[in-house]
Image 1 (tube, helix red, strand yellow):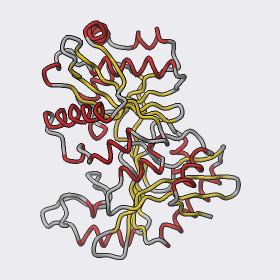
Image 2 (image 1 turned 60 degrees about the vertical axis):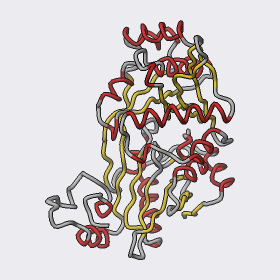
Image 3 (image 1 turned 30 degrees about the vertical axis):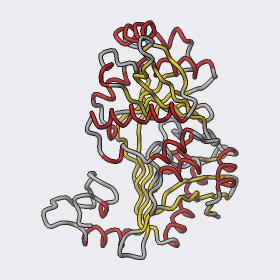
Length: 349
């Protein structure tokens, strides 16, 4: 059977009882990341010795009685308790499909978690799992000396010089948070980032003051003038540390002090006994300059995958065809440009 969980305490208690979970799975992050029109839910499946938790955001499909489901921006996907076999996975898929149709959910899209490979075993045979690219992990189970040896020579030189030049401290108060937000948003404007890389103040506050996971904001100061010149936000949950956001003053880009902050978090996470330090990948999973930057810290790459499932093919086809612009030459059955097809920016509203 499947229950739909919307209560914070029940949601987070279920996460605590399952396998390794990340902050992306939490109720708190779902309420921070969702749009006003979206509803955060947790599918709780329990049957035949298998428990599965699937967090999702539900969205109305404008002008229709239908919904679709997506994941938060990050690494989510299903969680499970204990071990399971293929027969149990198939049963879960069957029951989930039945519930999706009952709820009028046409399609489901979820970004999967690079450090939970059994997600693929649980979902294979239900829709499509597509590999979009790689993410970079720093293996902090290695000795500090081994970790350091895996960082490129050039980056080690930058980090050593930055440690001599700058002072690192942890952001603790609202003033520190506001300084970090300014550095991050100035950096995003300098990079001409898309609007979805800018967040409202409640988002930052919700991450900074949260009891469901641990947020660390590291700041680099120039001792010569006391100016904060770089900041980075890291979020920890269980064995996993995520490099989330960062920004640097444009006058201090030459040494890229954010390298120092990433390395400082590496040192701290190792001392805390963490297992994974995920730096993420390039934009949209591509192996771009951002990915190249992160890969200078480690060559431990993990697949970044997404799961796409059409639960009502007939309605999906109707929505896609009716919203397909005349100049679109792509076949919605095979197009990889966007999923679900009917929400593609090339389509009419």
